[in-house]
Amino acid sequence: MDSFRDKIVPVSVIVAAILVVWYVAAIFMNAPYQRELNARAHVTPDLGAFIGQTWAQRKPTLPAPHQIAENFFKNTFLVKITSRRSLVYNSWVTLSSTMAGFASGTLLGILIAVGIVHVPVLDRSLMPWIIASQTIPILAIAPMVVVVFAAIGITGLIPKALISTYLSFFPVAVGMVKGLRSPDILHLDLMHTYNASKVQAFWKLRVPASMPFLFTSMKVAVAASLVGAIVAELPTGAVAGIGAKLLAGSYYSQTIDMWSALVAGSVVAVLLVATVGVVGRFVELRMGARP
Amino acid sequence: MNVSAAAASANDVGRGAATMSSGQTVVSARGLSLVFDTNDGPVNALADIDLDVGKGEFVSFIGPSGCGKTTFLRVIADLEKPTAGTISVNGMTPQQAREKRAYGYVFQAAGLFPWRTIERNVTLPLEIMGYSRAERAERLHRTLELVNLTGFEKKFPWQLSGGMQQRASIARALAFDADLLLMDEPFGALDEIVRDHLNSQLLELWARTTKTICFVTHSIPEAVYLSTKIVVMSPRPGRVTDVIQSTLPKERPLDIRETPEFLEIAHRVRDGLRAGHSYED
Ligand SMILES: Nc1ncnc2c1ncn2[C@@H]1O[C@H](COP(=O)(O)OP(=O)(O)OP(=O)(O)O)[C@@H](O)[C@H]1O
Ligand SMILES: [Mg+2]
Image 1: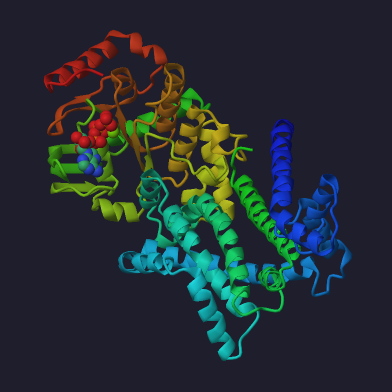
Image 2: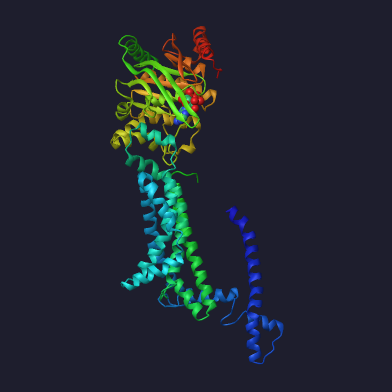
């Protein structure tokens, strides 16, 4: 736990600095609107009171951290989980399509990698297409997919998960191609001296050798999946999800709601990446890594 | 590795006779050449090699770096294809011999799978060759005992010293009872003391089994100490310059290296290395 204690001071210093900058920025960004309000109401508060006002607007340009924290806390813990306002509910909606997309993206990525590593024709033909697919901006493809699916009556999780799949298969495919090709020549020669079949070499050598690559790329993929799910919630004006909260917040200038939805998104992202990290570490330890 | 001297020598006599008289050949190369096509032009790794390795022999290959020792071993193991000449292993092509799992190969680096315990590293070839679980356990026990690693079954490679890892890799090559053992500088990276120890263990093991061993080394004393036959090679192109039949007895305590007979053979190896316009190791 030494490393934790070593980190706690620098981390809190940075956090404190960010909070100070944020509060100061909030004063300046919210001041013009506050002055307008005060002029209309014919009040002239002193400086202290004015600053207090800029930190307590209902629809501030830049909400103060405590406003976001308050909103986040209320919508996470005080509101019923089944409520439309609940961040837990909205996060769950996004999380479920993220995980569905991540699972199928990972699977697809692995299958593509296995194909590329074992079939020379695929190696030459597939890779350019995969790379090209990633040059299409997600903001262009997301509305198309969502709208097309909606037209044939499929809404909700599936189109969103599809976008997540689209974003997450790529890092996994690239990582796994590298991973499956990572065994030493020495180890491959060894399998050859045993007259091992391709299938045996795959399961006993290539797959275990690729595990570190898999988990590294899965961390990237799971974050990409979340982005995909959130972006997919934007174009349709989806009814629920972190993306939907962001969109609704921007329609009604509910900046505090938007920020707390962002915080929720970050929390989900951290949880997802950390989960993949923990599972990866567990697998590594099972496979004899030095603790 | 404690086997009674009596048992070992009885074994020796039986095998010794077979080796000398019937002379069953395990490896036979005729006019064997191998040219690597590289970007800098062709490399003559092996040129016109004629060599026989008899059953039960312990043959060392010695020569300066780049003279084709590894390449020759790899040709026997069907890891490299010769470009001219013929080679047979147990009377078959190297590929057929490999498919019959005729040999165990010990590489210069231990090459254990880092994600497998010692136990599962040693049983890897057995898994691949479809041995039953009971058979695997039995062979694991036997081979670990042979290389003095009993008790380290559950350890991962990184928990073992370099010498222990190398012994584990030898156990892995022994586990499936191939009659031919190909060893490419297996002790090259180890210190003198550990090397001496493993050398005498290897000799004991060879004396107890009826294996044929092809052993690559850079060390003259190691070659003389271990071998019944020493093949001296020279580079560019890789040729055999001398084949020395050892006159040392089967029973070889470590201090045999002090005897005049030993030194005489060592001298001849050294001369052979010099004659090949090579530097000494
Ligand atoms: N795969 C390869 N492609 C091209 N050239 C090779 C290849 N393998 C070996 N060679 C060349 O063949 C020659 C013999 O190599 P080899 O590895 O058999 O030597 P060696 O006697 O084992 O040397 P060392 O004692 O250093 O291990 C060298 O000149 C080497 O550069
Ligand atoms: Mg070599």
